[in-house]
Length: 340
Image (cartoon, rainbow, N blue to C red):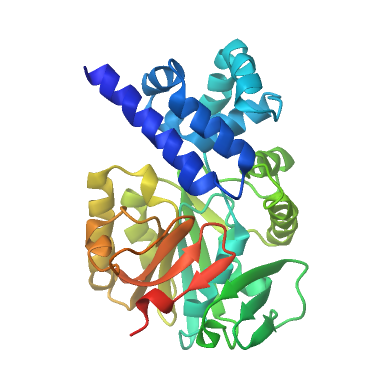
């Protein structure tokens, strides 16, 4: 009975990923996911794997790394059957570490409002591309027109684009970043071409995502000129000591995107407790910015407007209070549901 329940859970997870997250943005991943969800065998096979290896994005990226054809599920299914062991071997050796620099466009509205220097600490940082918000250029499509913002030292080769629903969300200045550091279980060396190739493979196939690959590689080149420090470690065990190392004259901002789904319920609750007491623990002001999906924290869900549609969007919170919906890849920032 437990095995049947696990298979049903996996089938529902893949079907939800296809219909809720890949729909309208990656037709191929939608087709693969819905196909796996309805398959009589694959959900049970996936359910027998460790939880980390059950993730759709990791399985799909591993298949593509192994040379999978980008064909409909009915044609891809036989290839997967034949190459199952090779795909799992890759998945065992790799990790889901999507590092989308465009997510900086959804953090900048908050970062730009912090007075004085800021110290950035990202948990789940991968290669640290989201630790460089002040090194990218931005175009915000706002109700009052298109507005741009560039780094203080000149135009950036990286252009991040975001549609906002309120002119007040458009940043008026760059944050003054005095310190930056990341935490990750498996830090990625941004100077390693194969590591960047893997990050590119994690990007979903589809016309909406082609520009993401080019943007990733350009951002990696910018980061490689002066890479941020990424600490190897468990975020639950590492975040307090890392935060304590930030300069005392800067406002510390701890932030993350799509990281909490990799923790179990107890781990998420523990992280929230750490963040709630972090300022007291290290004796300084701390801002906690989070881009995570709905249903990550019950305390956040309880504050959401009834009937809120958060498909393909993160709920952005500041110190545990929801303030915006942020597109999963940074292209949208909406505050209307939370404006009084």
